[in-house]
Image (cartoon, rainbow, N blue to C red; front, side, top):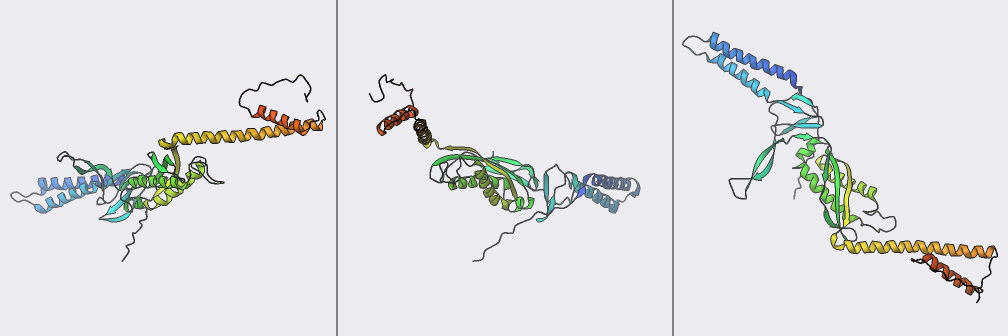
Amino acid sequence: MNEQTIKTNKERQISVFNGWPMLLINFVILGLGIWWFVHTILVVQEPGRLVWQPLVGSSLVMLLSFVLFGGFFTLQPNEARALILFGSYHGTVRTSGFLWANPFYARGRILQLVPNPKTEGGKMMVPTGHSRYKISLRARNFNSDKLKVNDKRGNPIEIAAVVVWRVADTAQAIFDVDDYENYVKIQSESAIRHLANAYAYDNGEDNEFTLRSSADEIAHALRDQLSERLNKAGVLVEEARLTHLAYAPEIAQAMLRRQQAEAIIAARQKIVHGAVSMVEMALRELSEQKILNLDEERKASMVSNLMVVLCGETEVHPVINTGTLYA
């Protein structure tokens, strides 16, 4: 089985003529044709006989001027136009202003499906008025919809991202993909889904990046994936970041309770660690300064009382001993 290799197109920039001198030349040609036509009728025309040659020549000159008028076009800053002559790519113009090129260069119009009033439920293709070969080079934003996917641990989550992109190679954008804007949309959503499957939402292992806690690393990974996917369309990804990240509604409450429990456990660990340090310090200070000598039983009782005081959640009401320590 023979495999067909798809040729990758590369942009090449070309220069065209300034439109204002060409506009003057066109008017001169048009004026010459009109003058020749009128001069033939009023001066050269012989009585009783029609002179065809000057009339045909002047008509062709006027027709030429009208054809040349079709070569004018304008480009705004950060716009480009690909020049196609009879199916062959000649180059891309990136110079802004009023320009003139071969009037036979293609001006392919973008078509879109719209409802057909003649048939019920049918659609028809109509031109949008935008040229397929005229491309904006400005930076654009793509805000993805909220996608429901599973993270690395299988938890259903909702995720969305914004992608800042622009066309870098007009030839690839036009000829290597069918619709580069739709291609960016589909590939961006695919990359976001792949990213969500590759990372856990949170509570990762040691030194593991997670979607919630490693925003910069996740943004860098998403940008790399998008650059790899969109490179064949001549699209440059300037920035990509998550704009929405949450558990799916069906498990949100359970995950919230788990997070609260983990937060309580972490807080308890710190409280216990601090209480043990304080009790140890108190016993050491009493022993070093010889304020009070306690046996092991009294030390255990004191440690128990201090731990209750330091770790308790409610206010402690002390009981004052009016007798001796051993009473």
